[in-house]
Image (cartoon, rainbow, N blue to C red; front, side, top):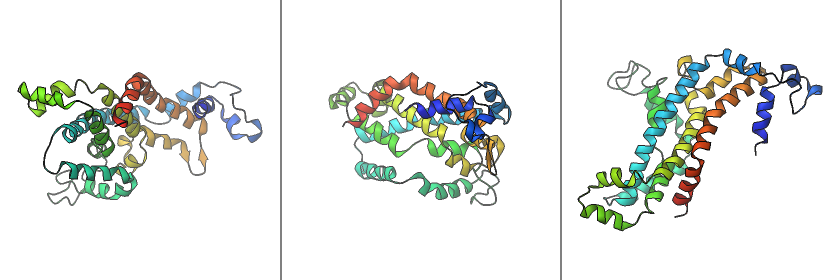
Length: 267
């Protein structure tokens, strides 16, 4: 499983002659060229790409933890008219590939009133296109997050709600005072899934942005590709660096991740 990752790192350490000459191929670098990492970072404004990706990923993860867990808590612990009907529609979202909804999402972002030069009818400008709004707000919630949180909160005993009600707790206060502190496993699981999805997403930022200042790290990797050629040593070096933040997040929270998946997936 680690072989592709190791191969990526070794390719990043090779000189260009070792990569492009077919008769000189070897898995291990003949000359370990660490300068590839520095040169790869100097070929593009990576500080801007990393700033965008860190900011977007951080805001999306924090926001999605709140919105998904609150929605999951509502579907699992509260009774209100149309609850099962609404949850059925959320489950349908699990079956729809994101590529199917990309055009409607693009049109909605472009037609956002009072933004990007648009009038109150959403015409005349670019709306939320090429802004943080388009990259953050649609990702704050999702079917898989609500589903996992609902499954997690179903595991709590009903006596907990009854005790909270007897003590005078409203449903909102019960969520913040009782359920939220006990949600570390599902927060870790959802946080890792969301971090990987947002950090590694290439297609959605490609459609929603068109300027250099809004590029993310995944779009930044394209600077090493030109017509007919790829600078593999720089591409692998930059990809190695881009992968490190996701690995750190996973290694820090993997214990809670396994626990959260088990408690929300076996019911």
